[in-house]
Amino acid sequence: MIAHRRLLFLLIIIAGSYTVWLASRGMLKPTIPDSGYYHLSTIRWINEYPLIFGLGNLYTHLAFNQSFFSFVAFLNIFPYFNKGYNIANSFFILIVFLECLSDTIKLILSSYKYGRWSVAKMFSVLMVPVVILCSLTLRISSPTVDIPIFFIQIILMLHLLKLIECDTKQESQMSELKFIIILAFSSVTLKLSTAVFSLLLFSSAIIYVSLQSKSFTNTLKRISFSIIISLIILTVWGGRGVVQSGYPLFPSTLISFETDWSVPLGTAKSVKNSIYSFARQRGKPMSEVLGNWKWLYPWLAKISTDMSARTDMYVRSPFILFFFGFISLLFVIFLNLLRKNKGRLCLPSLIGYIPILGGLAFWFFTAPNPRFVGSLLWLLSVLTFVNICSIIVFDKAKLLSIIIFTGLLFWPIWQNQGLFKYISLNGYQPIKKPQLIQKTTNHGLTLYLPTKGERGKCWNSPLPCTPHYNPNLRLRGDSLKDGFTLKVTSNKSR
Image 1 (cartoon, rainbow, N blue to C red):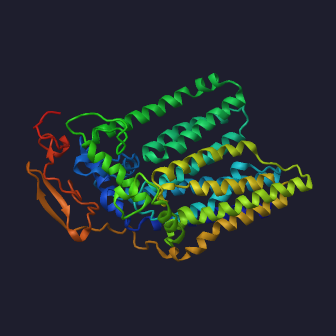
Image 2: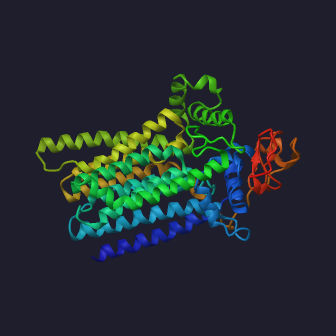
C-alpha cells in the first residue's frame, strides 16, 4: 500500500509539472499560417462586434462559423486581456490529460484492491502518451480548431467505453449517454468534418443502451431533453452561419438562403472545392485533382515520405502502431484458442470501431489531409491495444502488456524530443505585426490589406483586414456593424 501511495504522489507531481510546462508552451506566439489568414481576425471580429451580416463577403474564411473561435473570444477580457488564443488549446489538452491521469490512478487502485481491469481506464492509461505527444508536436499557441477536435474525439470515445461498462440499471449509464449526445452535436459546430464520426458514435451509444434496456422508446424519452438542447445548439450555430454567409453549413452549399448579404454561390462552391483539392494534392489545379483518382498515388507517396512532425503525429506513427497492434491481437487470440484459455474479446468495446472506421472513410473520400484526420488513427491503434489487454487472462501478463504498449506509444515522443526546448520563459510572446496598406473599394469602403511580403496574413490587424481585395465590396449600411454585401443594388436597410 505504501508503494501505491508513493506512485500516486509521483503522478500528482507529474501532473503539476506537465501543467506548468504546458502553460509555458502555450505562451509562444501563434505560427500556423491559417492563424494569420483568418483565425485571429475571426476572434477579433467576435470580440469587437456581436454578429456581422455578410462577413464572408469580406473574406470567405471568416464565414467558416467554427464555434471554437467564440470560445477563444470568450476567454479574452477584451480589450484588457487579449491572450485567449494562447490558452484555449492548452485548456483542452489539460482537461483530457487530467481525466486520463485520474483514470490511471483509479485503475491502479482497483486492480490492486479488487483485481478489476476496466477497459475504459486501460484506454485512458494508453492515451496519456498520446496527449503528451500532441502537446509536443502541435503548435498549441495557435488558435487552430484541429487541436480541440483531436481531443474531443478522444473524450467521446473514452465516455463511450465508460457507458458500455456501466450497469444498465445505473443512472450513470444514462448520464454518460446524455453527455455523449450533447458533446457529439457540439463537436459538429467546431468543424463539419467531424459530423460522421460524431453521428455514428452517439447513434451507437443510443442503440447499445436501448438493446441493454430492451426499450428503445424508454431510452428516447429519457434522453429527449438532451436531444432538444443539442438541436437548439445546432439551430443557433446554423443561424449564425446564415447571418455570416447565407449558408448554415458554409462552405457547404447543401442549404442556402438568398439574401442581400449572401456569399455568391459560385464563390462558396469554389471555396469548398479548393479545400478538397488542397487536401488531396496541394499545388495542383482543382480541375486536375477533383473528379478523378490521379491524386491517390502522389498522396500516398507524400504520406509515406513526408518527414514533418505533423504528418508523423497524425498518420504515420499511429498507423504503424495499429499495424503492430492488429498483428499482436491476432496472435493473442490464436494463443488463447491454442491453450484453451478463457480470455476473450470485450465484444461491446468493438462498437468503438464503428465511428472510427466511418470517420476515416469520410476523411479519405472528402479531404484526406493529415491534420484533418483528428485523432481517429490514434483511437484505432489504442482501442486495438485495449482489446489485446482485455483478452489476456493473467493479471501480471495484463499489467506487462499495458506497460509494453504504453512504452510503444511513448516511442514517437522520443522521435520528437528536440521539441522539448520550445517553451516561453519570458511570458506571452507578441503576435507578429504585419505591414498593411489601405485600399478603397468602388463604393468608398476602406480596407486594410497585407503587403506582398506578408503573403496575405493579417494576423491580429485592425478591422476590416482582408487578404483579398474585391473592388465591388460595400457596406450594407453606414458602419461595419451593418455588414457587407456584393449586391449591385443599394440597400441601406437591414
